[in-house]
Amino acid sequence: MTLLEIIMWTSIGVIIYTYLGYPITVGLASRFFGKTVEKAPIFPSITVIIAAKNEETTIENKIINILESDYPVELIDIIVVSDGSTDQTNNIVKKYKRRNVNLINYPISMGKAFALNKGVAKANGDIIVFADARQQFDKYALKELVANFNDSTVGAVSGELHLISNEANSSSEGVGLYWKYEKFIRRSESLIHSSVGATGAIYAIRRKLYSLLPQYTILDDFIVPMRIVQQGYRVIFDAKAKAYDKIFNKSKQEFARKVRTLAGNFQSFAMIPELFNPVRTKVAFQLFSHKFLRLIVPYLVLLVFGINFFLLAKPIYMVTMLFQITFGVLAIMGLITENKKYSNKISRLCYTFILLNLAAIVGFIKFSTKSYSDVWKKAIEIS
Image (cartoon, rainbow, N blue to C red; front, top):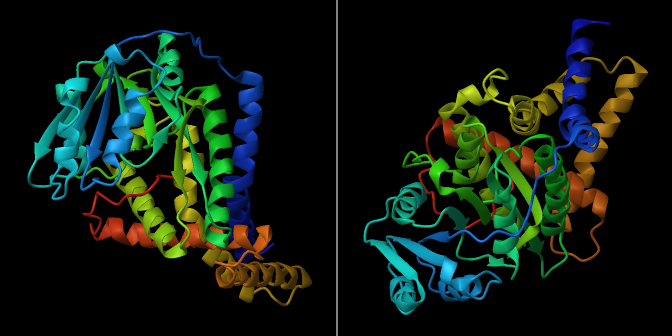
């Protein structure tokens, strides 16, 4: 076997391991070596922190949604940090002041990380729940989140985001399938020790474990949980703590969201590189396999395609080239039928795979050039 062949097959092996081998490995490990959580009904005081910027269309529904949760309302206080809002967000929040809803208003936008830092500094609850303005919580979400903290080893809990689409198209349905696949991995990681990150729309932590975020942090829902892991606690994924959101029905929106998320992954790795040290971090293997390898897959895909051209003299490499071309054609079909009801699952998956990997490349460029200053993209985080 030539050097080019070794490089090509090694690259193919890494790609397969990243998207198939690792999920199987972590799934089996969770089944045979999984750790249970001593979950039980408890009712500590909680503070729900909502960082908001120009959320006049969603903030009132969100406040009502929290206040109507199946959790003792006298134990809930809500802090809305309005970061440079120029619409009616502030006036709407003020209407609920008598119901333990507090407004922190900054007339100049300082970014989401700044807003979260200020919110936590004013929080009184033993448990902090982070939420976005747009997504609605299930009635029992707070109770399910908090029940996990009965286990003294648990430092943070991520809820499950359910994605709803009003249309059938390749972008939204492909993302929906990807999210189900992602939740399986997070659930499995959680059983082994900790999920790698949390769902930004719904996650909770012990207040005493919060560490201040650098101002321009993109992914608070990664940095906050991983710093808690570094303190020796577990980060749990609880599917019973549900929130609901809509899937973007346009690939342009989904692509922009994913670029931001992946630029945030690069930023996070640069901020806390010690996470990859297995001696210091119990999730180093999961982090490497789940997050890091996905960022290099697009380059491996290009490498495999390029090398394949030099090996076409052998029949096996004609087959591998045909497979890659077919995959590309299916992805193009997924793009063409994006807003059509007759798109098929295979083309949607191929299209989603290409979309995610292109986003990883653009995300790296954004990170390298520091052109990710907009930390207020209104988007779900599926990283």
